[in-house]
Length: 83
Image (tube, rainbow, N blue to C red; front, side):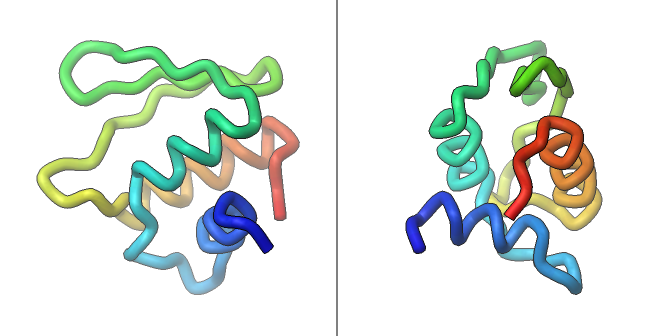
């Protein structure tokens, strides 16, 4: 199992994890062909398989919060990227 597979598994793990790093999620998205563009402030626009979403890059900590992780799950499910 590769690094991106582990990241995908951790995004969809139950209960929702609190230690998934944004950098790992961004690397996963890029690996699967997502277009990522910077928005205003900490906003990041993501397009993958015809699905678009806007997320906030977490700061000051590198980990995504549980709410953002749930939103990322929905986005990835709509974009047909699930474990």
